[in-house]
Amino acid sequence: VLAGPTANDVNISVCAGSSIDLTTNEGAINGGAGITYAYFEDAALTIPVADPANVTVAANVTFFAQVDDGTCTAVAQIIVTADAQPVANDVNAGNVCPGTVVDLTTNEAAINGNVGITYSYFSDPGLTTPVPDETNVTITAGLTFFVEVDNGTCQDVAQLDFGVFALPTANDIAANVCTGETTDLTTNEAGIN
Image (tube, rainbow, N blue to C red):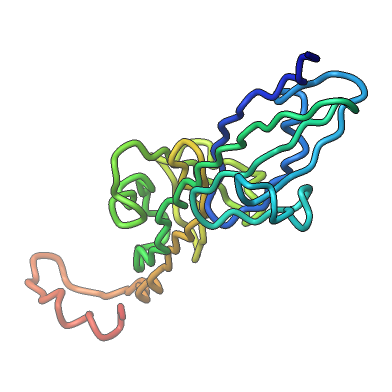
């Protein structure tokens, strides 16, 4: 009796809706030379996976890898857990006065609010420029920040928007009064603004 080839089961986690390449697991399944692999959707090995290098995973699923050493075959399971994408709600934080210092992290409850979530703040949609200190940001003009929400397996991105109020007009006023004279400063309000 010939010994069959090694066929180790593999467990992987991916984000729901993402595409995976089943063939990247061949080293863990067997890893030997001269081995061929065939991938199936069912344990009876009757429904081949159309493109093992590009499989979209919407929910938890098990694939079956038939390992063939040229003489004997064995079957391994590839058990795929599809983790849910984290919630990443866009937030309009409203308008602030120019020069206001804000703490971006105070919006985390509105962006997601769940435990076990980490947040990373960026000033560009490509997520290449981190905000140096998300707890101390000066808003001088309308700004959009991009918040990466990570649940440990999957990530999503929310936009965090700030607008600015227009500063009120404040004109200097010159008024002449005599020494000791009483004047009503409120009469200049129309000229100031």
